[in-house]
Image 1 (cartoon, one colour):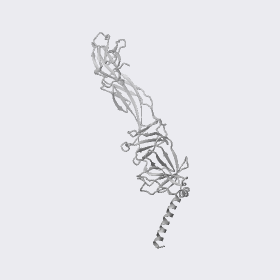
Image 2 (tube, rainbow, N blue to C red; image 1 turned 90 degrees about the vertical axis):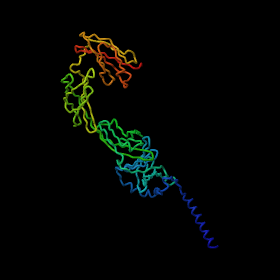
Image 3 (tube, rainbow, N blue to C red; image 1 turned 120 degrees about the horizontal axis):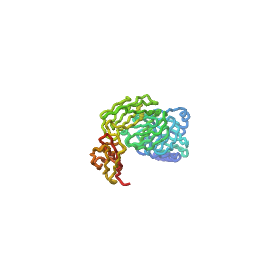
Length: 431
C-alpha cells in the first residue's frame, strides 16, 4: 500500500470516529436570533454551578439604590431586590419569587421558589435582547427560555418622582411626562400592585384612602415597547390630620358702600403654620392675616350681599380650609316688606319671557324694579326697569352658558325704602 493510500485511509477513519462521537454525545443545536448571533455566552455547567452554590448562598445582599431588571417585549419583567428576584407579569398579581444562588460575569443564577426550577438570567449586555435559560433535568442541559433585556439603573437617575401634595389621607405625585411619552405604568404600594398599565399622559398619580401619620413604601414601574423598564422606589409618611375649628364672624359696621368685619381666631391642631384669611364680599376677594378688615367701594350687584371669611393653613404640601358665611345689605338698601306681594311667572315653558302683575305701592308713590338672575352659582343684577313695566325678555341677559333651568328675581323698590320680591324658575325644556 502506497503512502498516499495510507494517508487517505487514516483521514477517513478520523472523520468516521468524529461523526460517531457527535452522535453519542447528542450535541444540541440552539437557534439564535440576529440579536444573539454575535455571542457565545451560555450558562456554566450544572455540575460547576452546584459546586459553587453553597459558598455563594452565604453571601447576603442588601437592597441598594441600583435597580436591576430583565424585561421582555410583552411587558413581563424580572426585578432583583437583594437576594431575591421577582417575576412580574404585564397584567395580574401572580408574582413569582426566586432566590439568587450565584452571580458571575455573564449570568445571574436563581431558583424559583414555587417549583424549585433553576434559571440563568443574562447580565452582560444592556443593549440587546438575550435569552434567559431554564435547566432541564430530563435532558441535562440549559434550554433557552425567554428573551429579555438586562438593565441596571440608579433608582432616580432619570426617573424623578415629585411630591405635589402630602396630606393625612392622600398623596399626589408626578414625573416628567415628556421623558416618558408612550410609557405605561404600574403603581405599587407596600409591595402590592394597586394600578396596572396606567396610560395617563399627564404622568401623575394620586394615592387615596391612606391612614394618617403612616409610613408607606411605593414604586412606579414605567414600561414601553422594546423591553425597556424603568423603576423608581420611594417612600413617604402621611401627615397627622390638621384641623381648623369653627369660628365666629361679626359684621360690626355697615355703610352705604362699605362694611367692617371681625372674626375670632380658630384653633389649629397638628400645625404651627400661620393662618391666612380669604375674605370675599360681593364676589371680590382679598387676603389678610388680621382678624378685622374694612371692605370699601362695594357695588350692589345682588339682593343680599354675601360675605365669606375662609381660614387657610398651608403647611408645606398640606392645605386645610374652614369658612364662615353671612349675608347683609348695605345702608340705604331697601328693606324687604313681606306684606306686599306680587307674582312673577314664565310666559310658557321654553320661553325666556317673564311676566308679573303690578304690586301695590305701600306709600302710593312711583317705584322701580331691579331684575336679578341666578345661574345656580351666583345671583347677579342685570337691569333696572320703571314701575310701569310688567314683563321682560331674559334672552338678552342669560348668555350661552345657562342650562335648562335658571332663576329670575323681580324686586320692586319703593320710595319709602322698602321692597318686595317675586322669583320664578325658568324652564327651557319640557320634561
